[in-house]
Amino acid sequence: MYRSALLSPSEDPMGSAILEYFETGKAGRLRVLSSLFDEDEMSVPMLFRAPSDMSPLERKAMSECRGRVLDVGAGAGCHALPLQQQGFSVTAIDVSPLSVEVMQRRGITEVQHVDLFDPQFIDSFDTVLMLMNGSGIIGKIDRLPEFFKKMKLQLKPGGQILMDSSDLRYIFEDEDGCMDIDLNAGYYGEVDFRMKYRRITGRPFDWLYIDFHTLAYHASENGFTAELVQEGEHYDYLARLVRNT
Figure (cartoon, one colour):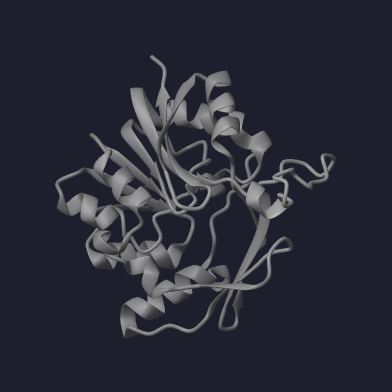
């Protein structure tokens, strides 16, 4: 059964931080909590970064966009806005209502407050862009068939997904390079997160980090061809997933 991931303003910590920074040029601590990692903090100004401040993987992904583009989990619009300025037709979507408001105020023409997995959300794109560990939006590895089924409804034949992710194996490797993980605990790249900003605490959510070989296997099982476009400096990579005609 489909359960919407859409947030309301009262449970939107990241959107609250984005809106405050957009309006004041300042922001407090955007805290990131997980049962797997120590508490971390996300830089809010980084969510407004220019292409010149992006990672090589992000810049490569943006250079590989073609046709109509869907920017998934667009946040403050740091990818959608420069693509629009380059002349692309871009639709930016996010589950955060306050992020959607900021993107609209920044001048992004087509913005929607929608969950990617909403059965009513169907269109026809040439490129689906999923950056900043974009595989995370899938949530769990057993949701990959549902994800690829959804992508077939969103992409034109021959259309592409440009997605970055990271292989978390480095967290579990010992000095000999062997993996020290509990094989009964599920896939090692499944992580739970919760975000807090000032007095706003968001819902817990699942986030999927996936190694390229596992991603490629599931892609081939679901009618897509996977290509490793570029590797990053620390177990991260950019993949192209092409819908087979």
